Image 1 (cartoon, helix red, strand yellow):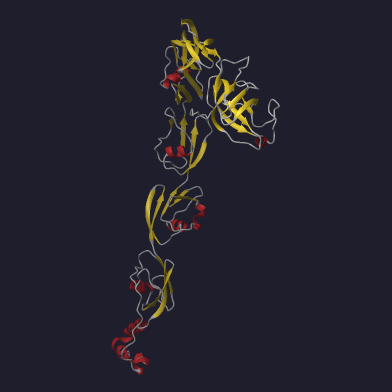
Image 2 (spheres, rainbow, N blue to C red):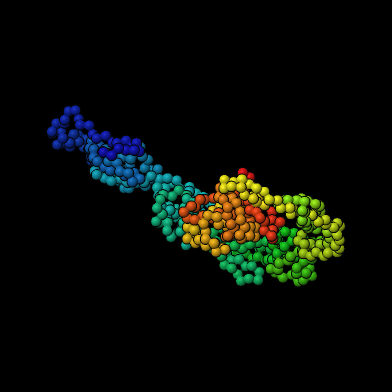
Length: 504
């Protein structure tokens, strides 16, 4: 037998008697009824027969199946009717549950009894709520049981979810809250427009207009109070003021105006023109519905500005200084140019500047820098022997060889790329300039490369057989004698971008 998770008591099977009845007594139950017939007459005899049937039924036990909310329970019954059996099981037949067959049905062996438990369902119709006690779970059946019919355009919410009235019969789960708002026909008449028929499920006039996307402004008049309840076939008349847009002081104001000219609309919007202010369209222009009015705030000021007059840097040869040395002979001083300007502002934007006067308040003083032209030949001992040089430069050294160029071994001057052939910026180190690089040796500038962030670089050449990678700053010595067309004034030294020089 299936266990009962609801705690329903199982009717116990009959207990066999301790002493069996005599066979004659079992076969002839009417023998003890004869005295009753004599004693009470024929009417009383019928009552005795019914009592005998009851006693006979109660003396028997038979199986029935009880199905509660889809769960089946096999029980053994000792009862006359469905109702008496349910009461034995502490189930109230009058609780509102759905019971099939009805409670007054006589109980039969192997009978199937179905019970659908009743529960509370909240039904709200046009804002009025009622509480239903029903065994039904489908919204269509619940509404039908409550006598509620739906129209196609009615708004239905099932447990907070919008639902199509035509699809309620197929609702898949039991419901606990049903809300219905009836659709109501109304007509909205906006002055100057064709009447607009509406069908709404809203409660108040204001809500119905909002649902229909009809905006109202303070200056508009409505024939019905917005808080009035929507009535079937009611007509709502709206008289609109002229819609305008006022753009002033950084704000966009949409308003309604009743005046005749732009000045009237500005006044109703609480916007005034002061001093040089003006409006577009002009203040005396006729007011037109939908017009956009822009207010221009105007003010004028005077400004005095001082602009620096840059001084020039003048270089002057100084034979007292060695090559690549400099000194400041005279400091520079910027001048001052003073300008008086009339400025007109419209909406805080300067739209017009008129120069009234310009004067030189202070003249600039040029900076004079002396650069050395005294070439001194120095000697450096190297592993390759002493060398004589006239200039020492700090440069970023890299290296290359033919294989890195796809096999190309011809330089810009036509030389063959090998050790001793060096690439550089020819504006800094002209072709054929002879140099010495520690740990590389003597080389000649015979090649160049692409533009870089500083001219102070060299690319040390190798053949494929003796290639050695370089990527660091080195001291480069320009070997004597110096060229006849010596550039005494080189560009200011700067490191390559991303390659700061530690000075080591």
